[in-house]
Image 1 (cartoon, rainbow over the protein chains, first blue to last red):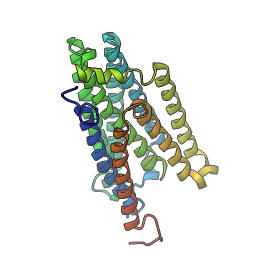
Image 2 (spheres, chains in turn cyan, brown):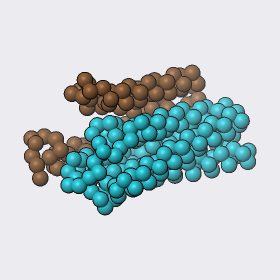
Image 3 (cartoon, each protein chain N blue to C red):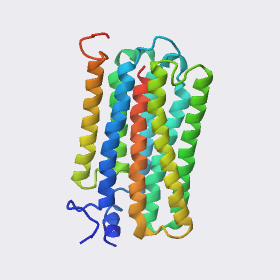
Image 4 (tube, one colour):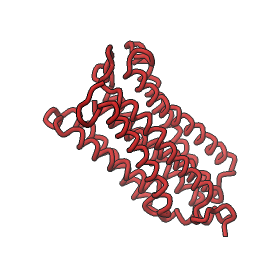
Length: 190
Length: 106
């Protein structure tokens, strides 16, 4: 019997991550609800139609989706004991996650120069809070992946530690599914 | 060690080729979403269309990449619980603020 398993037969850390993810659903649900409630109620511009860059964000979305593929392949590699592929795929997740964050930094700075700030209007306030919190989550995920890569480079991330990668992967995929919703609700449905 | 054993049980959940296939489908669905956005003819049905595509992507990632399709049902229940509460929050807030419903304005 696993001393760290819950009564459901799931490792406690994995169950804890799922409970955390459930709470995060409510957190992002509240932010999305706030964005939608105030949508179209800004008295001054810029409005979403004037400023949102769909082609750039589409590429960012694709990049984040592919990072999820790299994540699941990293888990597969660590479970197989393939250290080389573990490092390659973890490096891929870090690279793609970094690209996504870079795109968001570019987008935010562009919006700032176009006059959209946190205080400018309701759209700016709700947009920056929602996407900013998501970006912060991606950043935390990238830092987490870097620690896993360092562990792998030190030779301490073998198959016996695959749960570490699985739990980190759950977090990463969750950040991905949140973006799937944000991309549709904020960028495409205006 | 036992934790390792549990993790090992998830190894056979899906093959690498399945993961690649899911990634391709996700890419195609994203391209469809963007295409729909730029086609004026589809603007009358854009909201339900995009919501369906988005839900499909969400479910694919949750089922295959997060392994819910193969893992213990309790994990799906926990996740679904969070999603249900989040959905209720979104609908309630939109109703309260007049974003949906009877067309009431603040």
